[in-house]
Image 1 (cartoon, rainbow, N blue to C red):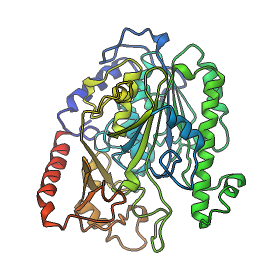
Image 2 (cartoon, one colour):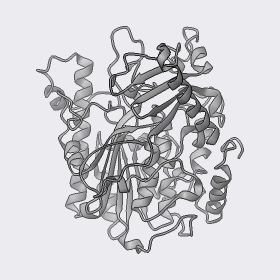
Image 3 (tube, rainbow, N blue to C red):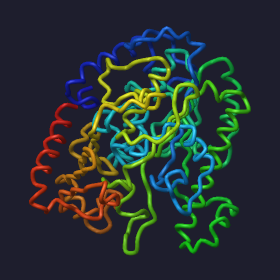
Image 4 (cartoon, one colour):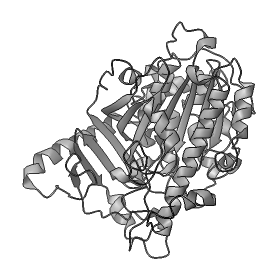
Length: 468
């Protein structure tokens, strides 16, 4: 257990939650297709009867830059269905994920924890280690579906899910039972929406949580021809054209999902939260990875930043919000929507419900933190040994600190694990003023006038890791 949950001020709280959850039988991890037993949780419930609890839909775009939406001002990509969702949502345009790698980011969305807390900080386990040896991390976590199940929610996993059987995270229903990315779950959005329709029909009268994480616009960028043709006259290179076309394909799938809800008259009692798991960009000339250096699996905003949309009719107010928010806020927000609080487990995030509401209250923070790790772990349950970068944003300023692991990774011999190459330059630190330099082109760390700021932000990062 020490390896799963390294010591921290919140470790005892988390372990206490796990002990209670184990006692009520919700931590089997390999349960069959059935709801977890109802039992008290270490949360304070509202007086809201279970039948009145709202439905919850979490939509997760996969490998899409924060800029690549119509509502974010892109001049070529049009996303009419997501734009329509944004128009009726509280739109947090300064959103981030702490870790810009698929599996780690999705695990944070399920647990509300940083990667160094839930320990799923990699895509692949160490060489020679079976994938299922990492599944206990999610099976023993205080995952959102597991909590909601004890309050009468049915939950349905579709799309990306790296953690083996969907019940490992407490989903009562799902499409994935094995595989690296999610096996049959990956048909959702690309091939069919029928499983979601069936789940909704079976959930009549029961609150539900829907995890919609199609592998879109993730590669392969192979959309139907009609989407590619829509960009034929835009003067784009083939890779960019295919990427933009896949975004349109994803957007249409979001439209199909919204129609499934409206056709069943579920819209008014359903909260929808949308964000991206991590950024992505077409590689530039000379870049040797399948995506741009400053996008996926990087500590730059091209990999970390995402808009976050929250719509709950009668409870949220549409409009843009400038607050700094993070994907660690998703679990607290969705629990708040369900009428639950979750302070007893020491989650680091905040509920965004008041900030999204009529009064648009400010989110009580001015600082965000994050971390990156090797794509392929060297050890299970020891995140710090594979940490490559730490980053902090306070106000308009962002500091990125490479670790010794990042420097060593750039020296891997040719023919080694290419996915473990940290291809960003490691001669940091990197300091940016994002207001003046939103694309992080001008590293100010060499400016003597910024020495005090670097010390201050470094101290914040050190304290953050020590506190967690």
